[in-house]
Length: 65
Image (cartoon, one colour):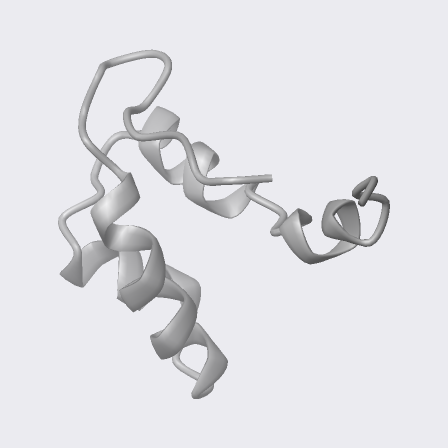
């Protein structure tokens, strides 16, 4: 749904990196190169970013009015 603010394993802040990661990978840059430049070195943090699926638009369709 929404990117977690911190990595669940090590506690490193991640949420502020999400938009830049999406922009750069959307332009065709490799995910590995983007994460290296964002200084995501630990595999736990990389997993948090790679495993994130943005479902907020899908969930918003079922909102009761």
